Image (cartoon, rainbow, N blue to C red):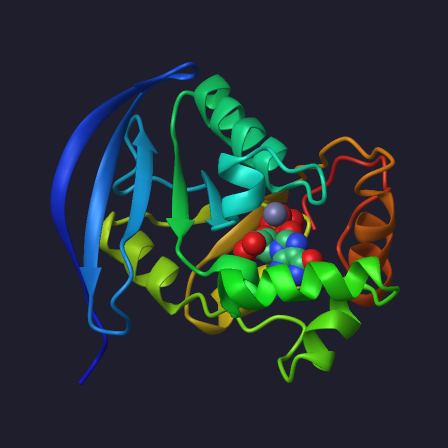
Amino acid sequence: MKPKVDDLVQTPIPTRHGEFILHYYSNTLDDKEHVALVRGKVDGVEHVPVRIHSECFTGDVLGSRRCDCGEQLDMAMQMIAERGAGILIYLRQEGRGIGLLKKLQAYNLQDAGLDTVDANIHLGHLADEREYDIAALILESLQVKSIELITNNPKKIEGLQKLGVDVAGRIPIVASAHNDNLDYLKTKAKKMAHMLFERKKDND
Ligand SMILES: Nc1nc2c(ncn2[C@@H]2O[C@H](COP(=O)(O)OP(=O)(O)OP(=O)(O)O)[C@@H](O)[C@H]2O)c(=O)[nH]1
Ligand SMILES: [Zn+2]
């Protein structure tokens, strides 16, 4: 049977970037509570700006400076607000899919000298275990025609395209680098092909 999502509740959420409609989804693939924040008209629309943000408790909630997640979350909401329409899908796949416990263990390994990729591998995981099936189903449910993905991660674009999402463009989202996250960002650029440290605005 084809996996599916159900849009169970929609409710307005006022934020410092203005009001979004929060959609709560149940799904047949996992037991997590995935949500989408929607601004403006997106159904039947092409080139909708979309951020697919993977949960990062430490970065998103606590403002941890080990990673760029918290800043990217805020930047993405601001970008969507500035464009007048768009979607932020918040996927509950903490720690690139390995969960909070393993991510915290990976942090300690990183403090002992491993980088963010090798720490995952040392714990018996892949560098990135995320899936985008639920995001693709949410976009289908919102009847979006094509998207401009807000990301620096080429694997995310490929993953969505394989699932049949029309990714018509990319909007870069580069957070600030500082002492606490510089090695982490460099590893993402070098080992995970993230398009960081480039200054061009592009559509690739
Ligand atoms: N396992 C692990 N997960 C991490 C680490 N730092 C951040 N994360 C998780 O990584 C996810 C975010 O992925 P990133 O690789 O930062 O970025 P991305 O979403 O792939 O790419 P962008 O769309 O460009 O932001 C979140 O789920 C975080 O919890 C880490 O050191 N180890
Ligand atoms: Zn993070």
